[in-house]
Image (cartoon, rainbow, N blue to C red; front, side, top):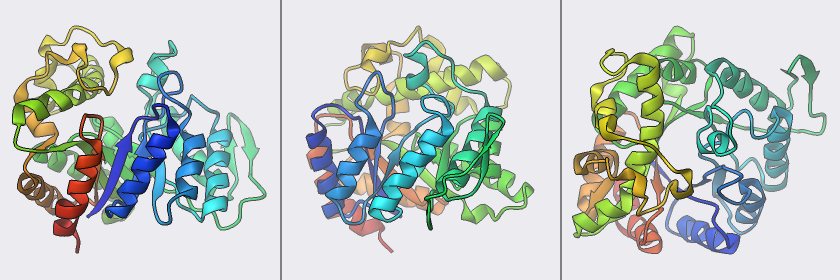
Length: 333
């Protein structure tokens, strides 16, 4: 199993770069950031600095979207980083949550997202793509490679990930839901004539190592609120008891009343009081290192190729170090 570190692009950027360097020293292979231009600093500028100061780390957004930048700009940015640092980027992409809603826009349709996945990958790898009716090609791209991993929860999005994406990003670490969603992605890949095992599976969730479970829960409860934004969209689309999505995912948002993106992804988020302890326990990795290892082994048995640690809490350095010393060695092949 590979490991990634996920951070927000809060200033100063030098601190983020330092944490990514620390992660690489501890055996992490991926460095991810949020991509929301109003809430945080521009990630692609920071990626260049991370790549300059690391040797092996692969970097990318978790996740970008088809509308913040035009597709040729997104592709050109990735291709430039790859040309400078040797194909060490990955494009995580989704419909758009905070980046779109904070700017007063709605998330994109799945049809638009599917078109963007194809176009961004083709352009970044030097092939021609049609963008808004115009055929484009980046003539300077030589031997570029850009895996595109799609974030998804609902049935149609999971199907699209299986049909088009090189990887699937699932932002929660519940084994039951992981099994259900990975199966949906791989079934869609097989039906599309693709090798289902070729779709990389990345599970991303907060991890907090320690014996004070109550404190860990409060540091990670924000995550249930973030996931709840996407769950609310699913409930609005499919209905509360439609059977299209497991109630193990949807039931907990019943008391959700709203969401203020000013607290997005931050410990102590006041809009996440509705998230019960059992959801925090199911969606996140908490407790001593042995509990993390046990849960990660269950996820690996379900086909998870990477676990990406959301370190948006008061123990960033300690978590990175503990994973490097205790968890990553236990999950290495």
